[in-house]
Length: 455
Image (cartoon, rainbow, N blue to C red):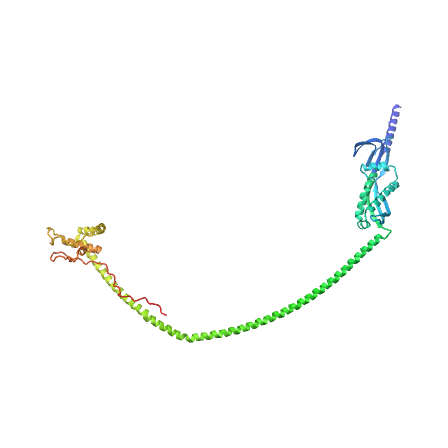
């Protein structure tokens, strides 16, 4: 029995707790703010951390402490406010009528939301709209007083920006946020803006008149350009005419030049004909000069040529004879070498020593030989001993080899000395003929002078 009572009590307590939890759970949509009042909560502000008697929930869910906390809702949706300002004096004292529309809402950020809670918690949305409207109209009048009608009418964007800047300061103090503001109409009761429009119309008409005048001026310019083009075309045609006249004159000058050239050519042809007529006379003069040249130069040259040919032939015959004599002497010398045997070797050695003797004796002073005596084997002078044939043969061999006659050279050293002759009956053989060097050909007594070119 007691267990059943306990279970019933627990079930009842669970039901009560469930019902209590369900009733105290609050869900906050995104366009609302839940304010739980009755407990102290720390809040971070500009002055530091401080405690307030409420807590805020935005877009979520939480549970209210039963009996202790009270829950209030605040909508964050826009509030549309129509503004109408009548006879608001602008800069310059012109009264203006301005109509505008503003969108105001509660901010979702702190600490602006705290200002809204302090001022408008529990206040209806109509009263909030009236407060915001009065504040915005005051700001609108203040901004109109700072601007001229022209600036307000022509620069609406600047006017709206300045109005939003002016109104946001007051809205923030009250905890409201100016979401948007649009100027709908601007008018005045004295016709000032109409006069400004007329002035603008006058400016437009003036611009149109200026455009018309400019168009007329452009037409005049076009007309002047057309006339200028026509004048240029006329000048071009005159220039072409002048150019054609110049070409005609050039052709006439060329014709005159050809006539002058033909005349000059005729004169040159006449001179050429005259020169051709004088050509036989010049040819006769040339023939006369040629004959004179042959008589004065060619004939003596030919004579000299024949004389030189005869001298060369004579020289060649003499050289041939001398060569034959030399060849005969060499043959004789060879026969003597073969006959003498060992003595030929001594003679050949003596022949080789002759150039050495000449070099050795070239440093000696010349000796004047007045008499040459050849001694015989018995020592008597003038005898025809066995030495004379040997000396003669040796002299002949040296003369055949070198062309030098020692006996003749020794005899020539003594003035007026007779040439030695071999003694008759000495039994010696006559000397072999000696090959002498050919004498140079005789030169002509006088040579003809070199012919000169005569004109």
